[in-house]
View 1: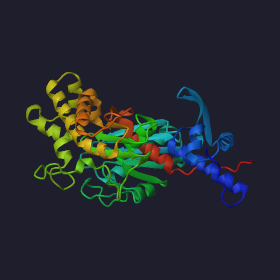
View 2 (view 1 turned 60 degrees about the horizontal axis):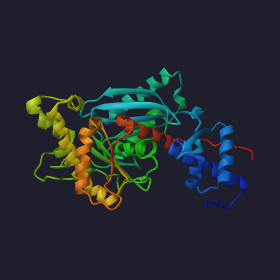
View 3 (view 1 turned 90 degrees about the vertical axis):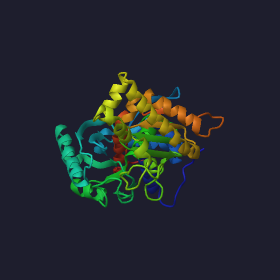
View 4 (view 1 turned 45 degrees about the vertical axis):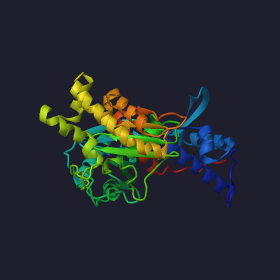
Length: 393
C-alpha cells in the first residue's frame, strides 16, 4: 500500500513537492483518476484527495465524476484556463497543426499540403504563421501559448531535437528544430519521431488505454514503428528504435531515401505499392488507392492486402521480441480497415511465436490520422511548466 515518503525539510516543502508530483502525473497522463494517482505518485489516498481539492479550488486542476471498470471515480485534469499548447505533425505530403488547451481539447486546426521534399526552414516558418492565425481566430493572445510539440518522419535525438540519422529526411539534417522554432515562438518546443507520437496518443487516448506494451505501426508513404514498453516510449541510444522501414530486406533492391538499398520501405511501403501500380493505373495518390479499394476495386484491394501480409511477416520479429499487448496500425493506409488489417493479422499470427495468451491482436488506430498530431499535443503539455500557487494547508 502506498505511503508518503517524507524527505528532509519542512512540512511546507514536503507539501509543495507532493503538489508538484501530482501535477506532473496529470500533465503526463492528460486525464487520470485519483485512484490511479495513488499508484503513479506513491502518495496516500488521503494526501491525493486533500491536494487535489486544494489545487482545484486554486484553479490549477479540474475534477469530474467518471466510471472506470464499473466503479465510480473522480477524473482529474489540468484546468482549461491555464493556457494553450500546439501540436504539429510534418507528414510526407502535408502539415497539420492543432491548438489545444492543457486538457488536450482541440480548439483550432489547420492543414496544408507540402511538397515531397519539404525543407525545415520553410516548414517551421509556416508553423509559426499557422499558430498566429489560429490564436487570432480564437481572439486569444500569443502569450497564452505555453509550449509546442512537433512530430517529424525521421528518428529524433530527443535531447537536442535534431534528426539523428542523416539522409532520412532531406532538408532537415543538422537543423536544431527545437531551438529554431523555440526562438521563433518564444516558448518551449519538444520534437519527436511521428510514429512515437502516434504510439503515445494511442496509449493514452486510444487503442492502448490501460495497456503497458504497445507496438504502433504508421503505415503511409513510409513505414514507422513506435514502441511502448512498460508504459514508456522506447528511443534507444540515439532515437533510432523502431525504424523498421529502414531495415534492409533486399541488399540488391531499389535505393531508399536513407541512402541504402533494399530497405523495407522500398519493398513494402505505400510508395513501393504506388510505383508497382503506376504502369497500369498511372499516377495515383495513396488516398485514391484506399478509396477505390474500399469502393470495390479488386486489384487495388489486392495490392493493399499484399502490403498487409508483408507488414505482418516483418512485424513478427518485433512482436516475438517484445511480446506486446496489441499492435495498433495508423497512418493513411490504415483507412483501408480490414483490407489491410486482416491479412496483416493472418501473417503475423502465422509467423510470430506466441504462447498460451494467443496471437498478438491487431487493431486500427482509434484516433485515425489524428494520432500523430494528438501525440504532439501530449508532448507539448508535458513541456509546460504549471506554476503551483501557494495554498494554505
